[in-house]
Each structure stands twice: as C-alpha cells, then as structure tokens.
Image (cartoon, rainbow, N blue to C red; front, top):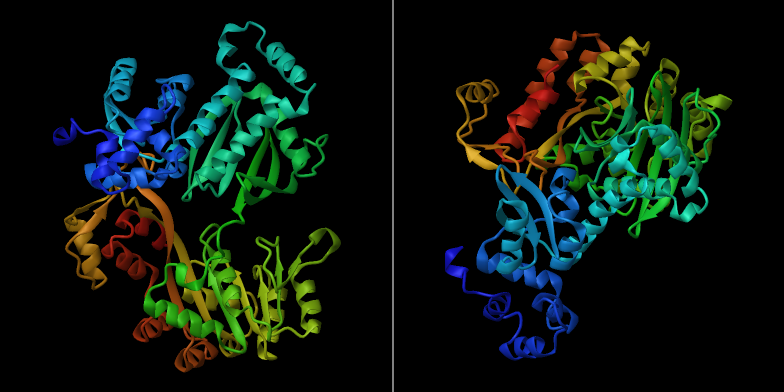
Length: 562
C-alpha cells in the first residue's frame, strides 16, 4: 500500500469519478468541525456510502466486508472503547496474532489508524465497510456490553453477596418494564441471531452459569457465558413473549413469537426443557423477510433440477424427501409448493407445525393433544378435493398407508421421511408394512439430501489435492486438479466457511425399478439398477461440488458416509 501513502479519500474519489474537485473543495470549506470528509460528502448528497467503499476497494485493492455477516468476539471489543470507535467511525472485528483488523470506510485516515495502533499496541489491518454498517455494528456489539453492565455482569467478582446483588438489580429493573435490562438482553440476543443469520439460539444452563449459543451454518458456537442467577428472569421474559406459563418450570413447553427486528418480520419457535441444572430454552429463528426459496436456488445441478421438476409435475404419485433433522427437507418441500402454487390447483398441507405461511395454500397444523394426528388430518383433507397434498412427515404405518391410497386415487403427495439414502427409503416403506406392489405403483421418486457448508469466498484458496483425496475422487471416477481449502478470515469469523448448500441423491422410479420393487428384490440390486440408470449417490454429488470449488471434501465426507 506504499504507493498510496500520500493519497487521501478525496483524491481517490476524484480519480474514480465519484465526485469533482469543486465538490471536494466545497465540502472542505463547509463541513462541521471534526466531521470527516466522507461523512460530509454523504451529508451534502455528493455521493453515497456504498460509492465511497466501492471506490476505495477498486483503487486500493483492500477487501470489503459485510459487517452484518461478521461475528465479533467480545475480547476484540475490549481493546477499544465505545466513545473512540463511535467518534472515529471504525469497528474492531478480529485479531490475528499481533494484528488487529479494523473496519473503516476510509483506510487512508492514517491518524485514526495510528491512534488504534497506539491504543492496542498492535499492527492495524484496515478492511472496508460502509459507515451505516459500522454504526449498526457498534450499536449491536457495544450495546450488548452496555446491557450486561446494567445487569452488573462486569463487577460480579467484586461482590461478596452475588445473588443478592443481582436480585436487587432485577427488582429495580422491573419498576420500568421498557427500561428493564432483561428486556434489553433478550432484544440483543434476538438481534444478534438475525444479524448472524443463525437458525437456532440455545440457552443452556450449567452448574453456576449459562451459555448463549448460536447455530450458524449448522454449527453451534458459544457467544456469551453469563451468571446463572439471571437465567430464570431471562427464561420468564421469553415465556411471556411466547404466551407460555411462566409459573410452570417442571414440564416442557412450546410457544411462538412473531416480532419485527430491524424492520424484518421474524418468526420464533420456542421450546423449553427442564433439566437437572435448570430450564434449557431453544429458539428456532425463521426470517420471513427472505424470499421464499425457489427450486433454482436449492443448489441442484442442471440434470438434478430437470429430474426434480419432472417428479413434482406429475399429476399423482408420492415424492419423498429424505434425510436427518436439519438437512433442509422442509425447504425443498416449500420450494416445490412455491413452484406448484397456481389458481387452478387446490393445495393442502398438514404440518407439525406450519413453518412458513404461504399465500394461496391451505395449511393445517396437527394437534396431538386433541388426537388430530397426521393420519386423521389426511382423512379430512381427502374430503376437501385436493390436487396436491403435502404431509410434513411420514412417521407411522397409518400415515404411510393413507398417503399411498391418496396417490393411487389421483393425488400428488409430497412428504418427508427419515432415512439415510434414497434406496433405503423404498425398503423403509416396505418395513413399515406397506405391500411392496403398493410401494412400486405409488412411489414416483425419492430425493435424499444433506447440507454442507460453503467455503468462504473471501479467504479460501486453491490447493492441489492430497494423495488420499485423489484416491477418493478416483474411486468415484471424477478427475480433479485443484480443490478449495478453508482458511478463515474476519468475514467468516475464522471458520473458513460462510453459508450452506445442499447435495442431492435423486432417485426417479423407472419401469424397471417398479418391477424390481414389486418383486421384492434386495436393496443392493435396486441400488445397482439405479446407478446404472444415472442416479448419482450423495458422495458423488458432493464431490462434484468440491470439484466446482463450492465446498470441501471434509464437509462432504461428514454427511455422505453412512
């Protein structure tokens, strides 16, 4: 970066054609005392936040980060105080050895970067972010710290009577519910989950503390460890929001919260569980502001997408999506419903519970407490003249039998089932007590799927595969010269991965497979015939994504080997 030392932000913006010299001079003459030139340019309307960062990225070749997707450890926050980062419009985001990574919209603001170096005693690596992202990150992370301070978290070790101390704080907080630190703490927990795109929040009690953990890209990580004395109040606040019984701490409860976080509609599914160390709480986070996933966004290859669409376009038959919990089965079903949802069809779903409400589709929740099960719901649905039925899960023989009957009487039935592979789904239905000839005549296809993490596009690097990796590719008849290796950076919180995609094993039941299933042929014979007809196994589909640089072999092997 030596060649740019004499440059200033204004110089770069003029060179990139974002603003003119005249505008720069006007801003320098009229800006407020202490106001940075970038802020003034935005305030005067000469350019916007994103244009500044784009220009700096193009001119200086400094990488840009999305702070909404960056997870920042509290140890980093302690190095710089809130007043300094707020005034300087910077955000500390990571530490690498003796180097601190700082997000800024002006990496040529050398006085500020030198100030950071003097305050931390570390070398400074600037990365680019918009001012609005920086201000949001400051509010999010330093706001969390403020909330903990209001609960006295920082001084807990100085108090002899710790429990009494916290009880006094919580009692005082209840005098004004809107100012309650517990309410603020819950809000901060939810805000962090939305910002990090977490799928679940876990509140786990231990002997003397409790952990707040987030599941990001399928992996749980601990963000906070807090004193256990505030746990009952925290759980009670969540129960109040989800209309649960706050007096009942000895039985499991389920609830639901619909709320708005930063202008985004969020649906939260709450589950509490009494344990020997206290109540554990899990919150499933559904961001309703995201566009519903279409089939073209599931991660299917061109051939897989063609088969997928062919299966769900049939007027009748059963299409099953298989895989373990958390493998994206429901997402695939909703993508199918979104594709099939037209005015000329009657679609009815029966779910436990309804995950996302879809316009134009009749969705039904099962309720075991009143004996309204999948099987009972299906019987009623068949009297509603449906064209397409979606069953949340085939769990038992009765549900399977009714689903088969529905498909044989002219309905398209979509559902999920817990099996390890597409072929095993066929034998699983027979094991459940469905006659093999009925399975053969009703089953159109099975989609087995798993989720794998995608390598971070900012830090992953191409390397030559090891000998053992080459052998795995060779066994599966795939030629590869380079593979991606996860590294780790500020954007992916040093994980090396960012986001997830699915790998698929799609089995379309051909006439020959129908005959073999009806004749009760062995599972390995069915597998042999399916592969002969072009079915790719999960391991093969995963290796294709490794070859394409989307994920790593480690991720594929974790989910594709039985």
